[in-house]
Length: 68
Image 1 (cartoon, rainbow, N blue to C red):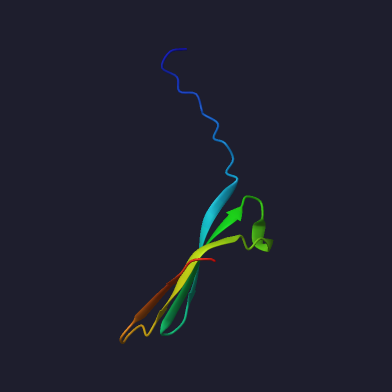
Image 2 (spheres, helix red, strand yellow):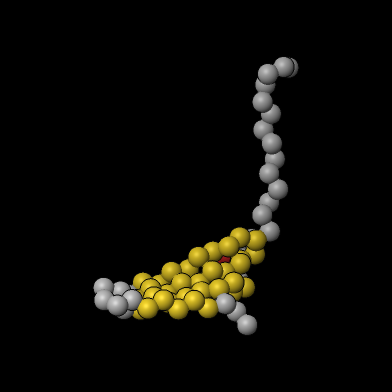
């Protein structure tokens, strides 16, 4: 039939990037991790980077980290 759209099948993702955030009253910590598909809550994944913001509400200081 002409003009009928057919659904396309997308390939399954093998991994996804997950941003993990931990907020306190005056600080914020974060990490970016690559997690394999299907790992669920048990997989921590490979650390891609992270950082820390301290002194929120005053003179804030930002620290960025990369693995290695």
